[in-house]
Length: 437
Image 1 (cartoon, rainbow, N blue to C red):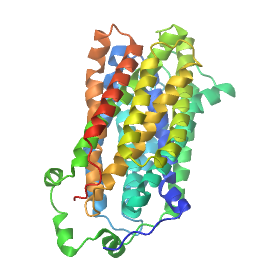
Image 2: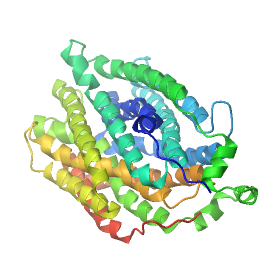
Image 3: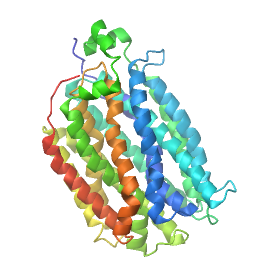
Image 4: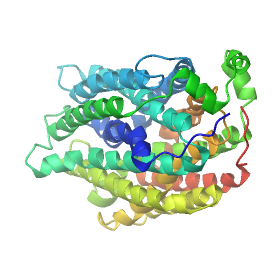
């Protein structure tokens, strides 16, 4: 098996640049979905239920995309065709979702439309996102993977910054931030349109700059023989049995991390509106103002994540930087309970950004270093289950937990902090450097 050569910085950059556009879409979704459904008329105790179907679809779709792309060889490449399909669907849905309340439907019909659109949006975003993770695994050697995934994390958070700040920026230039009852404000709607346009540009850039390895070259660099190629027909259950230990231990850490961030996406809008603006009525102008500020806070989180992504490669121990980052994020979530000033809240979300940077970079660095190339896409698709399952569980339990906490949405952020700290403790069980297929 030939060793993969070191890649120049800009080749590493190009492998992940499309993540910038995909993440704008993801940021718009994560920062505005609860705001959209609350505006349409959803009860706060029901908000988490709207988040169940997207990860449920993700856990079904991602392993299929991974397995199919492992066996796809076209003129467009093996991973890039799935980027094209996912991005095309995402662009269409991004133009439809924020208009759920503008089609003359009753409240129930508007929420049902929004629910289905959200399902397709999350599925398509994940379909577009997954190829970039696989491309790094395919083309980058073990020594550079930490840097490659850190670049991906940087671009991911740069895209987040654009998505999070879009509504408040549009408000600042005079676009209306309020709308008739049951309709989404134009600032949010136009933000989705802009995100869709940027995503199209990023997909074009990716196809212009990325060259995927042809089959023979890929096999040479990944040590795949005809005999090993036959083994790729094994079903996913057999592959799970043979999965390296890092698949399961990192997956356990992922469970606590993604459950925590599910509660952040679901309840930050209500928590900030209540804790800082002192309102709980989604129809109040102050609630929409708080919604804009959530975008600012998520942007601050993205800035913290970008800066921390630069720091991560300097740590030799993946486990130390992984656990440290999660602890910092946990402290950030816990601190939101005590903060009642909108600007002091920046500190909390900078710390949360440290956890997010590690969540984007470390799991895939550790996992892909313990995999060979034959079933890379399938394993990464299966690994997406460690992202989807905790979100499904957290969303299913969110309403009940919120009731137990007296309806306090800020206490849901405190719970998120506790989950991150537990995840940091579980990092100790990860075994690094296991090279199994």
